[in-house]
Image 1: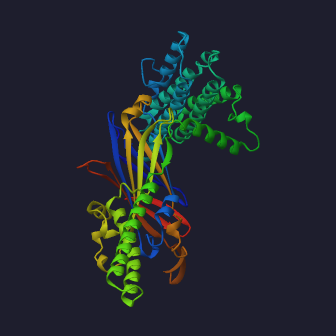
Image 2 (image 1 turned 180 degrees about the vertical axis):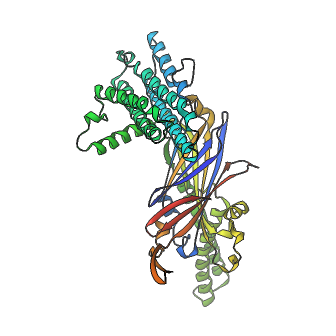
Image 3 (image 1 turned 90 degrees about the horizontal axis):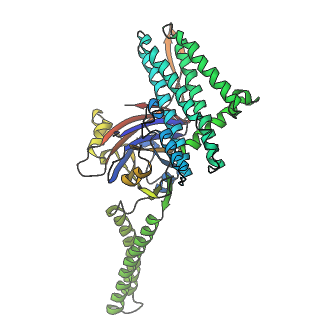
Length: 494
């Protein structure tokens, strides 16, 4: 079972991406409490007074998807491996041969799963090899056999997939499903070539691995020739003067198609608005009741249209408005989970059933009001002048997720985690920032020399992920967002 994990990266200059992995329970329901605390300097005025919860939510997009299955490449071509998409597709055709009906969407789902798993395995291997060689290049020769094995395993999987083409000629298989097979083949080839070229570059740069280059090149040339023969739109012979543009578009389209099987459909619930209307009506009714009772009191004990009568009527309406606002605020603080800013239903992309529910709550505060473990992680106590400095403003983004683990595993038996991808547009932090360029000077050889520098701001982000149950200990992740007025410069883990 996977553990909680949170990775924060710069998506572009104006968007931050938070990727959180949540383990899925094999039985029952999983409940998770995700908290993201953004600490910003007081001079940026990032407070509830200046920014509404609705404005924050409009700048946040969250996608919930299944994590790619962790299956080694040898498992895909092993007929005895029950988790292999190829094994499951073979079983579908066995039932079809017996005259039974099969679910073609499930065949398409298995093809998409194979592409997603292949992409993750091959990319992770290449990334890890690059990292290891960068850190220690003295023993790279020990990886020669493993690189050769990876190329052979990629070829074996491609060959195994391509043996399915004759079986898909069955007249009971629709053209849409045949297209899915063709797209899977094209996508796998693109992934294989991209990573083989990376392996070529890695091996070419090291004398100990250089003998592998002809072997890798042979694989690439063979795959290029196959893709040209199939007349795939992404084959290099099919590309025109806009080759890079065409290839990037086709690769992106195939990636989105394969990953569409991973993303849950998010449906916004109207429950918060309805509850908000009910409580607002209750507060208004309570306030009006007070005003009516005050009017009855004035009618009973004072002469109509007298000064005392008029004063009571006026004060009753003043208090009526205050009572209404106080009650609305009180309801909001006493029932935070019921009055979530947004509630979403998450549906399984395979069958459209509701399999999860999430609630979003936005809160604003200052650094000293945050939980002790968050203050400690922020390391607020190390500044000896903290007491005389303005407090930092904190925006707290809370996401509560409930997942029906058993229901999910009925259609996704390989699943062991889901991934929450949250993209945040950071424009609201930039409004109060000063111009980024600052000029400094230093003395060099007795002469003043100009040094250009950027004025930057640090936004600290602390993520707290835990199960939503008593006694659960959160896992904390701390990042510093370095920004200037033009946007995000970099993200530094702490």
